[in-house]
Picture (cartoon, rainbow, N blue to C red):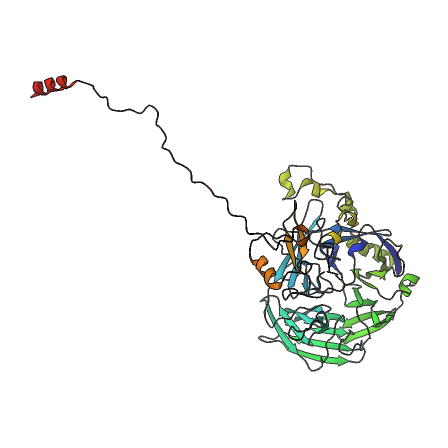
Length: 529
């Protein structure tokens, strides 16, 4: 067991609580960055690379037929093993966007291709379901179950905003536990069904879900209704019968009071390690546990915890994810140290033996010799398969993410200072117009070379006038540039009709004409008569 400090290289500002780590085709991927994606990585998905004492991020591209995947915090992520000829993939459901919107979409993330230097390209598709669909939520879990030769996905728990009919100005951003329903997805036919079980009476979020064959175990979790972390353990049994599936639930006595824990698998068998999380709002869970799933059920064994450094012991919060078999990434905030350039301390925890750690790290850190020493094909550009030649550089240093290359977010987006008397504060902002939900309404001022955006509330626009601008094509000038409410639409340019003149034909042959006097005409007339 080792605990190694890591230094993020120009990427510390992207990591935040709620991110997800995925392991696809031997590579470790980071999903759920802080803020919206920038031009250097428009997909918001990064490859994570570990070097001795360092952590670097590398932008990952999507295929041309992929859909947009927003940076979601605290989504439910489930890995799909290859089966029936389908590739290894991940299911992603729900989560919160940087604008605090809660998603209800279901995405399927797979590997699309690899370039000549093994550069990974992903494909993201949005899965459409029919039936009883789960609403938008975060902090929930998804697990895969197998029964009678069939496969299904189990979704449970999570939090969401209050129903629209119950939301007021004071409780606009308040969240509640989702109803304790179990949703079952049939990915083959795209069907969803909801099931209510009497044993699951309270909503849970940020719990642990472990699946083996046709059983799913729900461990711990936090309940907003009671503001507690009850030491609960449920075993959900799923039978995928012909027609409607049958679900049953059983309450077990060997639960653990824990929420927001990190889970890593330690081998091909169902053996897991639980690290991190919280026992209460003010107490972290510093112990480690081994969880074993077999035919008899679930078993817990104590595991020696790493020797925690002072930064971890004294921190109030921590978060992280699994980086491979028996390996985890931990992050704690640099509380009370404004002089620190980075926002968090990062550590890599390994529970495997030395030899196994090296092999596991090589598989997930993208540090194999084949990867770094490979050279691109020096041939015609037809062999680049639609990519530019500079994208195939085998040196991994050239395309590492560098947050210093990004533009300042304070100068762009919805939370800019639009004018001298701007009244919009992202910390205290509340919806002003009926069309606003999570971000303020803005309108474009046409004055100047490129124009600029201003907040409608700062310009004291009525809701009727704001709707009128959004539906028409009128030019608007803000108060700082004349104060004109709007200017009529520029009249269309009059296009004069073209005057068509017939073209003269050169060398046109006409019948010959003979000019003669009237006396000659009368002579010839008498002659022929």
